[in-house]
Length: 347
View 1 (cartoon, rainbow, N blue to C red):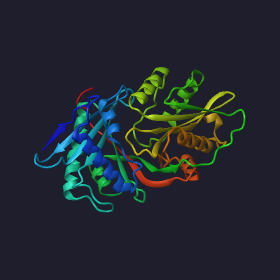
View 2: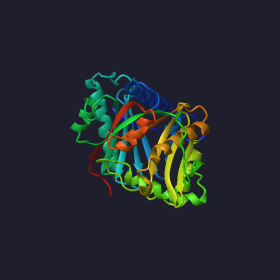
View 3: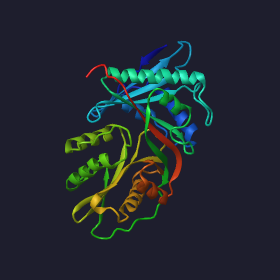
View 4: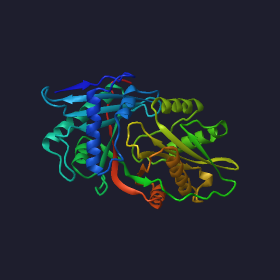
């Protein structure tokens, strides 16, 4: 048994077969769990992750248990580089041979492979000087978070359930909102905000990093600056993402933002919801629902072919859950975030 590091992708070259297979298996698992393609990833997205950025670095490994057989699984370990620098995020992908059918228990062989993958994730995190490992499970919508064999395996390794999510899709065909003066909407592509909006947008980004529920998972506030925004805009361009930001302002300045992104290589009819946030001084007026309506309609106009938007909500965020329900949200899955504290091998 050995873990084989996957080489970092070189721009202009074809992705490695192992990366293509990793994505295929990840999507197979997601579609078996959800019965939908909306939560699928793409080769392009994984390649961009493996190239790294100023904010995140990602290492990938293939698990070889027999040189004459397919890899038993894959491991991705991502490390935040600006905030939460004590955290490592682990994602494991099983080969189809070990992937249980929906509703079926993990086989003993699958448990063994998962044990190897998580043990390596914890060892890599420790070598990188990280003291916390976080990982996510995707499960059917009807499954109680924290139940099932996979969750049992994590709990047996000392992981604690920190956060649960509800995931689904919202159609873009929603009624047009009515905006009364002095409310004004600006539509911005690919984070190219006009100068008068930047300070207000940065304030909302900072607030979102505090307001979005994280449960028992370690997650610090994000220090959004003009330089960080410019860097993020360059990454959007470099990774060929298509991003639509709807900014709501009143006479005093920016009061809300909702963002939707279509990722390269993903199903063209599906985009993904980013943050939606209304400033504290403007809450309680129904602006969040209309802001999301505006974002859905603007995304449909700006991103030809998009018919639905995939969105995840913390189960403890009833405000946004109710908004999505009013928009026709169809729940396809649940998610659970888990955390383990480890002893780092370096500072």
